Amino acid sequence: MRVGVDTGGTFTDVVAEDGRITKVLSTPTDPSEAVTTGVSRFAPDVLAHGTTVATNALLERQGARVALVTNAGFADLIEIARQDRPALYDPTARRPAPLVPRELRLEVAGRLGPDGEELAPLGPVPQVPDGVEAVAVCLLHSDLDPSHEQAVAEELRARGLDVTCSFELSPQHREYERLSTTTANAYLRPLCAEYLGRLQDLAPAVLVLTSAGGLVPVDDAARAPARLLLSGPAGGAAAAGWAAAAAGFPDAVTFDMGGTSMIADHEPAVQLQFSCRPAAPSAGSGGAENPVAPRSRLRPN
Image (tube, rainbow, N blue to C red):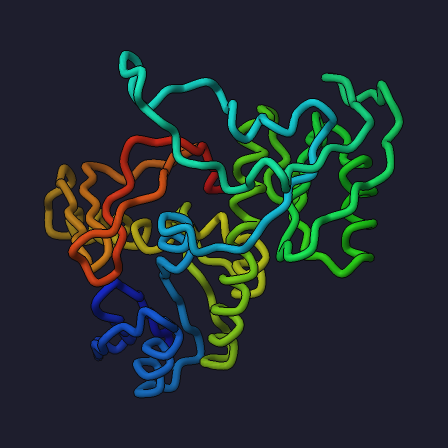
């Protein structure tokens, strides 16, 4: 039996392929408790899960303490970004603080050119400060030649650190987009890996919905939680589009209102990047409102 489960800010919904439905109160301190309670009423062979755990962790800044390793002279790329301003003519506008504070942005010597050719050999890997839970590694042009990133990652992993490399997660050109996606992944992975690990035994096959609307094995989802940032909303948009078309309404507006956030959309579409910023607490039970006024550019993959 195939079963789908979606965790919202107020309720966790479980739907079986035979039409049975159950709804339980969500458990914000540990969403896996509500998922386990709901799924226990079935005996699924396949469990498909849509989640907002990564979404809320990023919006509410509840992720890990992260360090960033990048090329010498590029430590502030995460803050400079593409120089977009929240309000073009407002001199008092402020950007949200980056996920990595300045003291945890570490530089390493070495440089690859825009054609992937080595211009300067890789230098010593810096020491990571105590208390860091995960490390993001993003070096120039590693989408063309990952050898420098591989060497840095090998050294850091040998020290027992959880490392996300940009060439493994998003090997595409444009340095800021690759860096922000890699940093977000490192920021979310300790929390999401722990959460998803508690779901592994609920069914022989556990799949997680990604921002692109597809399903991946739970182990893959735990390694790349940046791909889950629109997991819940993607499921709602895809299902609403299918239901509207089946009912004879190919042109419809979907409205998804939960206990944590609200989303309205006209037509599901694939984007190569999307943006978000921290949200202020709201009256909703989840504490995060609809993400607006974009700052960080992330690739859903």
